[in-house]
Length: 238
Image 1 (tube, helix red, strand yellow):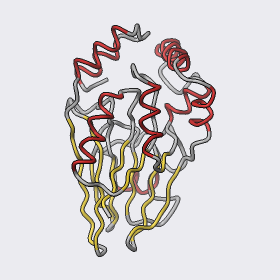
Image 2 (cartoon, rainbow, N blue to C red):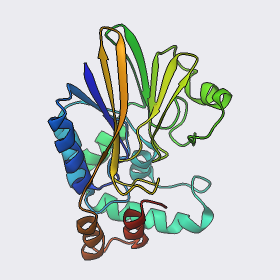
Image 3 (cartoon, rainbow, N blue to C red):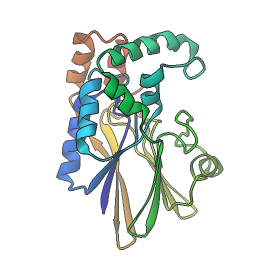
């Protein structure tokens, strides 16, 4: 069973299309979407429609929650709060009630078995859509924050836009990075493949080129309220 885990699309439908094309080329059996579908990108509606058309398991991310109810004080730096809510208003203006209801009703965690191995997938941590667990955290921090809700063989999460794979006490921990807004300086979308066959496991981080200049033009031409997002795309760094 070859599984693709994608996340943090952030309204970048151009990048999502490139990733889905790569997934098809690699003959993946199924896809899991770990949240952050619409917010902060120029094509929120089309991104959501592409995700929904997959007819696969989708969970909620913090940015999906922000679309539903706005960004609250304390969740982002104070100097960013006003602009991020302006962005949220712009995103919501491109969606309808059914879209908002869809995002609101998404589950927050996946736990399933595949070929005798258990997989726990979530956006940030099992207990929070917002907690940040970075690649350089200690093993103890990883265990405490990411590996507590279930006893699993593989833990998959997103949120930080910086992909990595680690092994702790025989368990696999994967951060799948971001489809639409990579933050690690690599100007390519990121997602993960987990391939399980006869209880043998292969894991990989995939990087996919997309048309950065097209996305940058979209931010400008569509009058997106935060033009600095074009620089994030340009530099693959926030």
